[in-house]
Length: 58
Image (cartoon, rainbow, N blue to C red; front, side, top):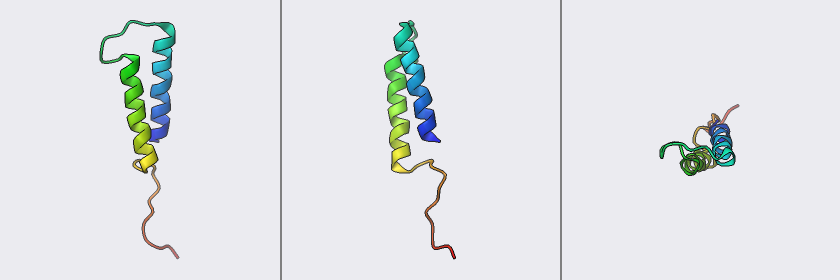
């Protein structure tokens, strides 16, 4: 789930950068890319994956 959110943020950052839109400092393409990288790092670390690797199942 976090991987999908990161992909959406990367796409929005790409659109802002490609269209050369002037946004305020909070929604700049660099900040959105950093948020996407943070979400991607959490996804790779296994947080928010939705799959639990608990005890044994029989």
